[in-house]
Length: 109
Image (cartoon, rainbow, N blue to C red; front, side, top):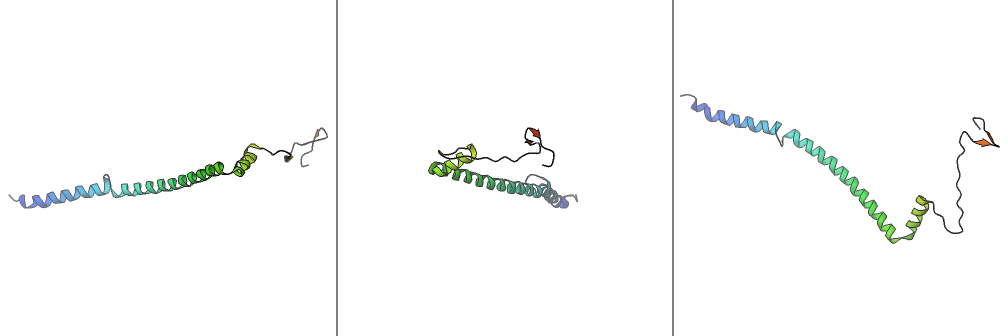
């Protein structure tokens, strides 16, 4: 039989084709690894942003625990609180439908 000399090289060639197919199309293939690397880079960037946000929140908590000035600033800014003997003045921008002496003002004034 003359098939025997081609049996081992043929089997090796099929094995090589199977391995190449796995390399190009299977799990852990080159495109799959590239996609996973892109996903990893995206997740690392998101983690860096979240880590920075966590640090900012931790600093804010530390400031609130340690300093009364920060609490006062927060209360003034967010809650509109004022101290004793302090006058709070708020200016409002006039809108187009402002009323002058009980009658609506003409447009453009």
